Length: 290
Image (cartoon, rainbow, N blue to C red; front, side, top):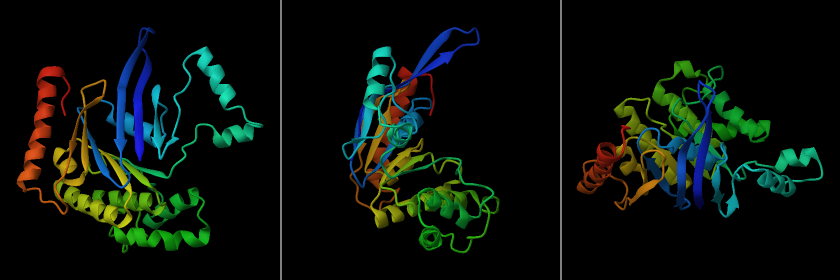
């Protein structure tokens, strides 16, 4: 279970004239995501979807609120006042600097993140990309290749083990990113526009690959996307963010059974409802477009 409680993220900005300013990217977002579910986050550009995803991953600390996974806090908000700083220091006063470094503000869960730009190492082969991720997770050398191979084969890269990312198509590079994420055995995968850079046919194939692997592993997936069809096709639930600052605008449960067909009336109807909400926000509440 992922639970976000009152997540707010504020960024301080220094203008060109050296005056101070600020931007609230996410405002009071509270959300529960059940284990083993696929949840998509939709919203206008600039509404804080990616920021919120990074807070779930523990890559950013919230300004207010907290994220819990199975009841354990991922990262606490950073102190913003002298009093909060003193309390923070007292709370994390361990017996040595080494202990501080080991325990303070470290993600406490098996989370993998997949980005839009693939984020694979161009100087490593497909196999080396996956085994390197396993090395970082502390997997013994002798176990890395046997553990990597099934995941590379499962995403259709069994014949491309020794190819470099530059020798792979965009869809194959994203399959490599997915294999690397799955190989480390995460409980949760967070995906930020993972299929946006590929053509429509490849995108739909990658979506089917993702659903097949999700069926096999039972992991929890949180997906940021601008594509309403993708959200309806993949998700158990669609969370729509408001125009900036981002907050939860609406939540749509997706109840149609899998496997789904994009031409089914229920799919088309829900897609139309979500797109109508976007249009209302754009025409009546925001200058931002999707």
